[in-house]
Length: 177
Image (tube, rainbow, N blue to C red; front, side):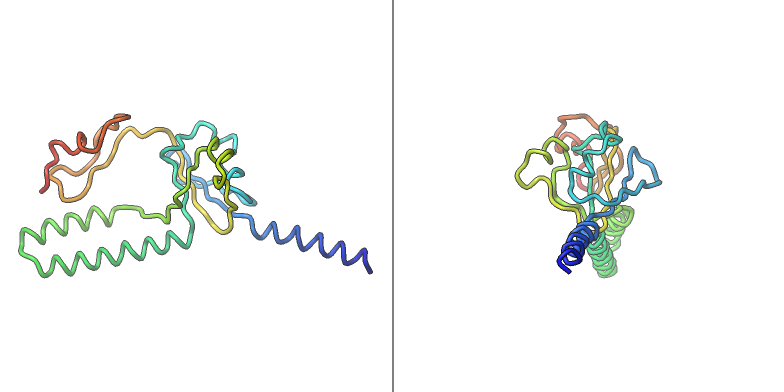
């Protein structure tokens, strides 16, 4: 009887750790096909993967499924509010608002988790290696070659990325519309 109780306890502890582990869809280097990692119990189990060793971690994003759904609802609410605002505005203002709506509508929103993904930080930071529970998506890749400017500016769109360049220098020449 005691042996059965111990075996049941061991199995239940083992099963609970399996159910607590996260599932992560990984998109790397701009690929449209995800690779799925299952059983990632902690963040280091994900970012410590050898196949991700050459990733540019400052630009990496991890999102959680429920947070992404909430962000999508917020985006839709904003688009609805902007449509209402455009309907109540003058022709020039409505054109500017609708241009902004189109830019926002084209954005892929995520439920980004605000955590440093650099494997070295994850290994040593006190709270840098949280457990992964649920469904996540990770986007990693090389350093960017462009940045995208958007909003009510005269020239929205892509510009070449320059490391260390400040936002003001990107916006010079792209005055408010």
